[in-house]
Length: 132
Image (cartoon, rainbow, N blue to C red):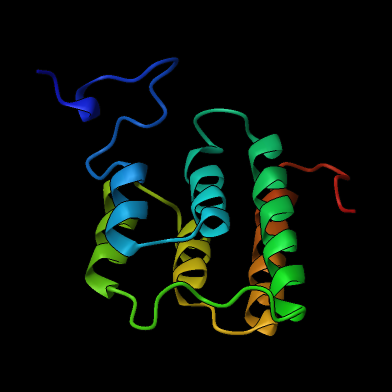
């Protein structure tokens, strides 16, 4: 029986020391957090600005839900060593690391607004007028 981590369907953007799906599982991230971390982790190796825009879209939805008290953080005590191992294992840039830490540590809608601002900072690196 083969290990699912040894193969990837379509591309090489998830081949890393610490794969994204393992990180999402280990951190018990919710759907929206998982999508944000996925897109920000792969944007430089796959779809560029479009992936950052997708991360912003998911962050916006998560903030809307939090503002209406329909969504709260999934975990209460993030595992900092796992977060740092994921950032290192995926060779994320400092701004990407800030996003990952923010996704794993948010507690209020204001935290999510700050997260979205960090995502827009990354998007600006693509010199696009994609702000909504």
